[in-house]
Length: 197
Image 1 (spheres, helix red, strand yellow):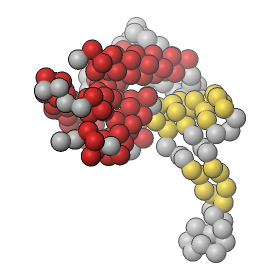
Image 2: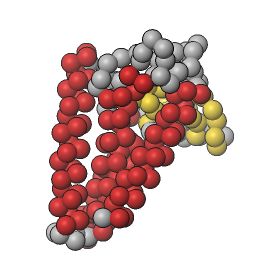
Image 3: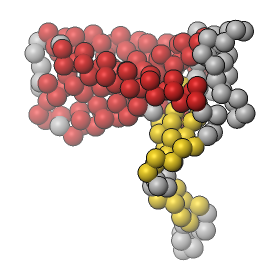
Image 4: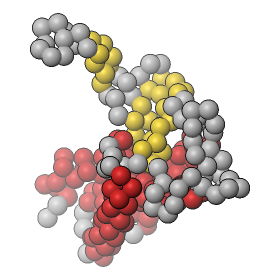
């Protein structure tokens, strides 16, 4: 139980601290190089799922937020069940990472619209602005900032339809919560024979 709680707390603390710092210190679209040209902090926001994917309209956003909350409830229950039955620690850590990541993005969706002013290309967001936040409950935007444009170039001329067009690997911008979910799922997939009964 202590190990799971520590993982969840650590992921949430790092995720929210970085998001709040980025949101209040960066203009929308602003970059800060960290390691040369292959790792940047790049401030962007999205209305949808991990890695910037979105569902259209405010109803899509509301559905996604409600789905996330229901999923967190299910994952939390299963994690508690695994802890209670002393399941493999790898399974418990994986579920803790996934749960923490899901909660981290729910916090953005549920509360950031109420707590912050709008982030724009010319004005930084303000925490608890006088006129209220930029959106309503469950309609906030998820803050993303981790950007790894590792390989940039152009497609070779012999590749049909893509010839000469720009190529970029890895283009999605994501956050710590997305990373925690991805790592948790990867551990489950790679070590499933060892950790799943």
